[in-house]
Image 1 (tube, helix red, strand yellow):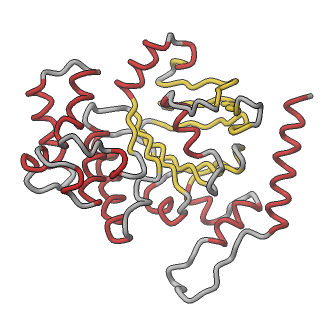
Image 2 (spheres, rainbow, N blue to C red; image 1 turned 90 degrees about the vertical axis):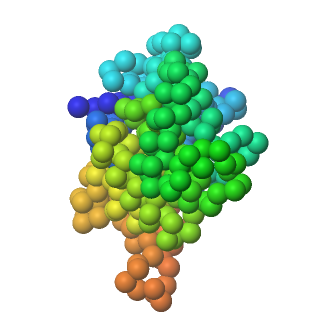
Length: 288
C-alpha cells in the first residue's frame, strides 16, 4: 500500500522558471525509494515540498501530495504542520549544521516528542536513551549531555537518525545523509539506516546522487533531470537494463570499484542535449 503518493507536483520560482515538472511517484509502507540525478535535478526539492519547507523564492503551483491517502495541500496550514510533524521525519545531509551547537544533544532529540506529540519530558528522555542505544552509541546517558562539537561526525549522524525515528514516523526523508562522511563511516551509517527502516517498517525516500548507495539500500528508484521524471523502476531492473539513454549514461558514469584505475565516463554531450530537448518538448505540451 502506498503511504506517500505524489501526483503531478509542480514547483516554480516566483519568476516562473520551473523547478519540478509534474513529478509523480509513490513510496509504499516499508519501502525504500531512491531519488537519483545530478546536482540541481530537483531531488531535495521534492523532499522540501513534502515537508512544507520550500525556499521563499519557490512556490508550489500544482499537484497533490497524499500522505496516507490525505492530500496535505488541501489541509489548513496548522493541521498540515501537525500531520507532517507526527508522521514524517527528516535525516538531513550535514549533521554538524543540522544540530544546534549551543544546545546539548538530549533536548534536540526530546523537544519534538514533547512539543509536537505532547510526551512528558521524562518519558521523552527515556525514549531518547533507548534510541541512542539502538543506533549503537555507547554511553547514551553521557552523549545526551554532550554538545555536538564534542562528538565525531559519525556519532552526530547517528544522533540525527535516532531523532528521526524517535516519534515512530511512517515516512522518513533522507537527504543525502552520508555525503559529509568518510567512506568507512558512510558504510556503517547506510547499514544502520537500513536496519532501523526495516525494524520500524518505515517508508523511506532516499535522496542521493550516488548509484552505489542506491544499489545497497533501495528497492526502487526515480531518475530525475531538470525537475522531470526520466525513469521510474525497481533497482534490479535499473542496474540490469535501464530503459532511458540518460539512465544508461548515468550508470556508465558511475566509478567501478572493480576497476579503480579505469577512466571516468562523463555523460556524453549528445545525451544531455537529447534529454534537454525532451524536457523542452514536455514544457511546450504543458503550455498548449
